[in-house]
Every structure is written in structure tokens, then in C-alpha cells.
Length: 344
Image (cartoon, rainbow, N blue to C red):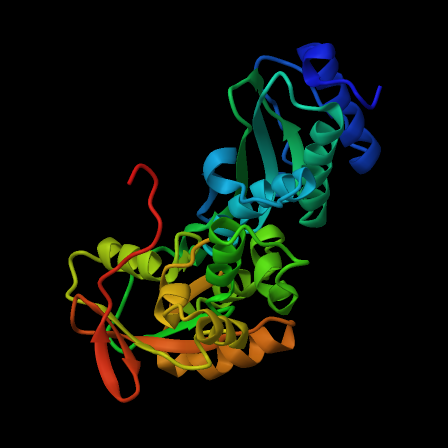
């Protein structure tokens, strides 16, 4: 049984296995049909005049671009869910349900398939997501394509547009760790055993775990003027914010200091002679949440976030110039290189 591959079972048996695992872990059975019909028990109450809307995100995980060396199948499943719910939480939306389509190779081992599913189901359950169902197909490489959804009042959603000059730029994590971790895993073909001093960096790639609820708090109290998930890298994310506010002549000025980057990135930069700017601005895969906030609301937001176990770092401000600068050693440097893009 343990040595079987997926082609030994076939699609129907795999679907039965998915149903069994979900039922055993969550106590909730799946309904089979051409479409998925989901009763929304949390929405049955009359909403009155609230402008509540459905919010969805679908971010595909593809093995050749999203799975670094040493990432096990459980971690792959976990990451596929995390990268999707991150985009909802940063908007101030509590994710409620998930649909997942799987593209699987016919020679995939059954044990690996189970580990993938367990990673998906466990992280979904951790965030109280209802796993509704999905599609299953044979592909040339592993593809995990979740769709996550939630509901929020229009007025509470934190969009990318809304920048104002003088707003603070804040983050719920520090940058540079994934830049280090990806360099070790991809370029140096290292691992936790060969680079024990950089365990935090490597795990930031294999098991990203900095998702917290700052976005939900910001939404609840209308603190955020804009927000974005930094999974494409800090530089690219800031560029996207500027692009989303194209009708305004606004950009960013970043403080290049300990509020921006993790000490482990500094150590790695010095040991291996890699520019710290490269690790910090072009790392990617951080899933750190960026917000802009009116300065008059910052102290209240910081106090409330910390009281609920979160964190905020003030890393810069919005300026009246459609460029990105960072301040290092009393010098202002324009940032011109951006992070990862598909098809580039």
C-alpha cells in the first residue's frame, strides 16, 4: 500500500481518499456535484444596510517556480493555503472557505500525496476554513490551485489605492530572511544541517509562519489607507502600490535600519559578501503585510496590535515623488531594481 503511486489508484479512489481525510480531520463531509453548493451559516443573519461583499483570491502554486529544494510535501500543501489566505487577511478579510484544484503527476507516490493533503487540510483547519472541494487532474508537474473566499463590508476593505502624502509605511515583519533562505536553498544548495546559523532564514522559506491578524485589526478600526502582501518582494510590492495610485504623484522613502531588516540577514550579508539591499528588497516569498496609515492613528494602532499579540514596524513614509528612495548612512539612494516576476 505504502509503495503505490497515484496511477495505481485512479481519480475516483483519490477523490474518495480526499473525502475520507477531510471527514476524519474536520468532521465535515464533502458534497459531490458538477458545482459546489455551500450553505453559508455565518451569513444567514439579516445584514440590514451593511454593504458586505464576497472577497476571493486564487493564487496558484506550481512546483517549478514555488517549491524550493528541501521543501517536503506537507510544507507544500501548507504554503499553498497560506499564500492564498495571506492576500485576504492583508485586505482585512477573514477567510472562511477554500476550494482547491490539484494537478498531479501520475508517478507521484501515494505517501507524498497524503502528506500534501495533510498540509492543506491542517493549515485550513488552523484558520477555521471550510474545505468545500475542488478539481483533480493529471499534469506534468505538481500544481496546487486554491481559491479562498471571505466576506467584508466595502468600507472596511483595505485597498491598494488610497495613498496620501505623509502616511507612515508599516510592516508586520522584518525583511531579509527569505532573501537569505532562498540564496542558501537555490544558489548554494544548502540545508538546515549545512547552514545551522541561518535556521530562521531557511525556515522562513520552507515554513513561512508570520501570518497574523494585523490586517483584520486595521480593517476593524479603519486604520489602514492602503495595504499589500509582500510575497513578490518589498521593492516590487512598493512599486505595485505606486502603480495602483497612478493618478497621484506619490512614492516612498524607506529607512534602511533595524526596523526594516532582520539581524540574521545582516550577518549573512557580511559573511558571504552579498549586498544587504539585495536580500531585503528583492527577496520575495515573505508574506509580510505592508500598510500605510495616517500618522495620527499610528500610536493607537500599534498599541491595539501589540495587545492582540501582533507587531508593527514603522519602516518609511509616503512622499510627494513617484519614486522609491531608501536612507542609508545619511544618504538618499533611489531604488530601481524590483523583485520576482513570472515570465521574465
